[in-house]
Length: 420
Ligand SMILES: C[S@@+](CC[C@H](N)C(=O)[O-])C[C@H]1O[C@@H](n2cnc3c(N)ncnc32)[C@H](O)[C@@H]1O
Image (cartoon, rainbow, N blue to C red; front, top):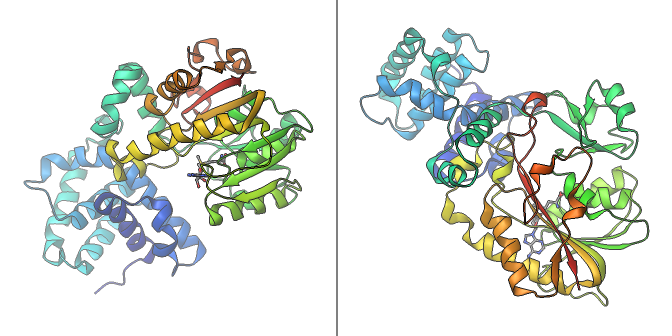
């Protein structure tokens, strides 16, 4: 029997973890790729992400040649091979032969090598890939997005989700200088944007902590907070720390809090690499009780992360709408907590990397009705590079279909409150 390619086998296992067991890749990546050398680890991740990103189109390509649904593992072997052939740059004969090896080695598909070989050859002969639609989101997410944003916006989002996103950096200072040094460009909102594929830790400025990786949209909540030198600011859900770094870089006196000790270790590492300081607290925000309130609180609440599907195409395949009800309740409780932790006259920035209005606009409406002392500060959202029609009655709505000509942005929602 042919020797199985470790990276492909790991990619297949990762795809199965997502499609069969509802696991996010971030939860299983380390375990599935531990035994591989670094280049194979990266290849396994690339193959799994590509397969998940293109899965909907692969299923459309397979449809006419499958009389019944294959075993899940066999199905994923077919999807992986189709991705490799059409989008992954693998020569078709190599992808087909790797798929046959995988199926022969699999527990349940051993008798199905002929089927896999035949179906893949039929898909190639049909030559229909380029004419198939851009991968569609699963119904559980597509439906509410259509209702909220309409057909054209969702089509734009799906275009964005099909592309590998650029690499955005937030720099301590001199964005144009860093853009030139790194061969990138400055986005309209002031982030440095590089082509996808750069090895982050090998780039100039990484070791010196001159910048950190942060999507251009994710950089906007801390800008809307407008941190001032010496202000006491609480970053209430801080890990891995992109926004903490922005607040500290502005000279604020930052307390960074998160419930996760492991994720908080990354905040400490990021602060130390960038030569910045913050008080780091591992605690549940809901029971955190400091001696005095803060001038401002940034609440980047845990959420569905549906705005980040460009980077995490596993998410819509692993999750379903009902998974988010506890998070939506937690967001409201965290917002209530933020109100009690903010001094009179202070401000709260509430944000989520979600496209679902339940985690954005609706949370704002509900918070305003629960807290008569809260008001919105829409003026704080008029930042450089922000189009006025991105700002709605409740806050700033950022969408992956914005900036299509320069590589898009993550989906985010940002609101700025004032506390009476
Ligand atoms: C969206 S992430 C924060 C991202 C971060 N602000 C950044 O820019 O890098 C949400 C964070 O909330 C944390 N979290 C969830 N529940 C929490 C709670 N009850 N108290 C404090 N942190 C919590 C999670 O551990 C997670 O790190």
